[in-house]
Length: 236
Image 1 (cartoon, rainbow, N blue to C red):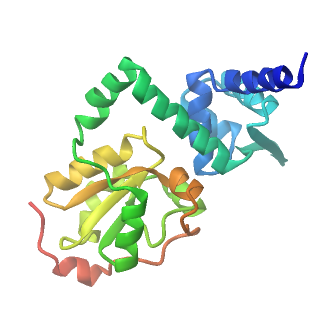
Image 2: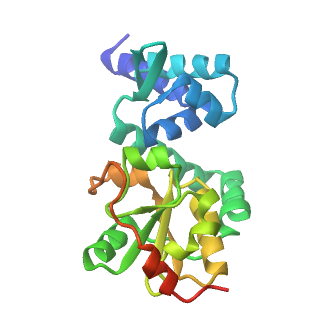
Image 3: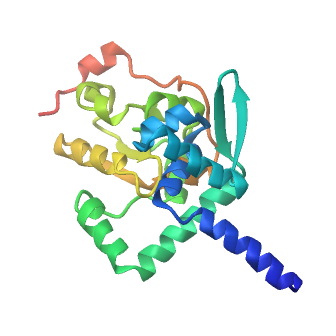
């Protein structure tokens, strides 16, 4: 076997590791932060045994690393930027070449929000000019491990009861786990129904980080005070 053929054989093995929807979903969850097998099992809805098997396939392909912490094994991406970039490329090829992918996007995603999403570059400019409020609708633990600068964290399930924390006179850009995460689509639809000027980011936190934009960790200091919130007009 020649050198080129040997390389192609190894690359084909890597491609096979991506060849299951469950493994792609696990990679998306790990792109937010490192997680235990138990956490990934709960998030994916797969059995513990199936989750473990898929993680072993990803580990043999060196797409994830594992570390034992007490009784738990914690997994993380082995090269965040490269893997997120590869998943994005796979998505773009699917959107271009696969009619079913395009139909699903139209039926499930774009039916919720047909407006053009805000690009990363445009959001970075608006952030620099102080012209936007950034809303992270992922769970709190994912937000704490990394988020866009100055973002406010209101998970989708809490959005309805926390609308008073959001400004009525500033554009809001919502984001979540990635381009096929429906959380930001649903958040934007809910906000617009209440009269907010809301848009979504073109993808999510992993893509923002992989593109080299600044991120923050921990709980954001930005919060509206109860007094300021109480003074705002109520949205009907």
